[in-house]
Image 1 (spheres, helix red, strand yellow):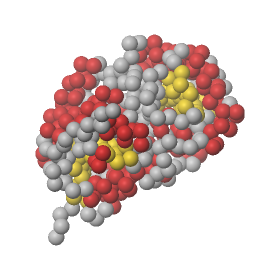
Image 2 (image 1 turned 90 degrees about the vertical axis):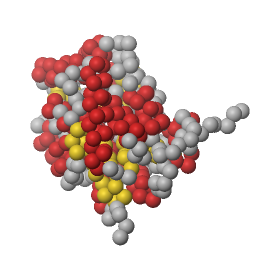
Image 3 (image 1 turned 45 degrees about the vertical axis):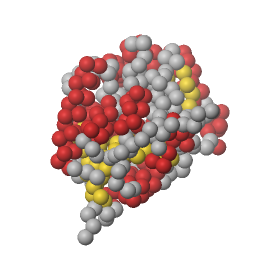
Image 4 (image 1 turned 90 degrees about the horizontal axis):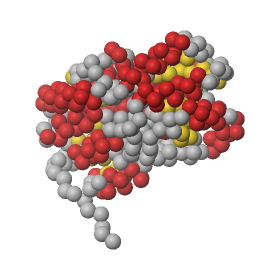
Length: 389
């Protein structure tokens, strides 16, 4: 009797879990795979909505919970959380003893998870490497994870080439397309009435969705950045504003505090810790635009035929379509860009746009590779040099 291949997926935030869910579901359904989940990071924190419960509600079992977040959003606190993640995830992996560890993205807890797995001798498969986000610490974390990983699943061919440029062997780097496309296609979205019930307000008239994360590499303080955004939103008296709060990054509490205060003082503004992935994606069906600096504005919003006002440098470097309007942290620029995204003329231009992240199927491609790849010698790597001119 053949043993099932044990694949461990590590998730540390609501946004990354939303992307992984379609892959997890396919691994769960495969009779030859034993899928185990390690849940950590903001999933376990009350101030971020205890989103581990969404994982349970989706019908998945959590093999291990690893508490890492301190009551701090400082850089010092983030470093200490990384230390806790390294210790806790090492213990969890030694208990589970997987054949392959799967991580997605670029957050600090995922960096720690990849480091733990690599040092302990477990093959690491990394999803969404090769991307650029020049305004965030995540950029360095992502490239470091690439160097610790043994298999790579990228969302576009330019990203695949960048991973190879980092010295990874081409035969181990797969362009599978954007897994976020599957995340949207594989779940039944809520209808308008259901979304309105969840939010406690109607979706009539002009509506925008706002998510603002800290620019962790910016020389400008978060207070100034969020002030510019809120001043622009204050000018939108005819628009309903749905705000979702930031992830657990250094400086996030400043943004969170200002957003809650703005919501209490402004009648047309509604603030939520977390909508959950299904409700968030469902909401995108009924808004005019996504505003802020979340990756969802770059990779998910275009699939709904809506524009994105991308503020600042956090997402600078990502492959983006013409639906994305890039603006600096400046009140008038943000306001004018939102009005442009809401205009009939701009919306008309979005109907024929091609999605640079493909049409779906990434999760199935990743599952098949994870299932069939030869594990013998997988943790041994050599540096791949690009040909010299």
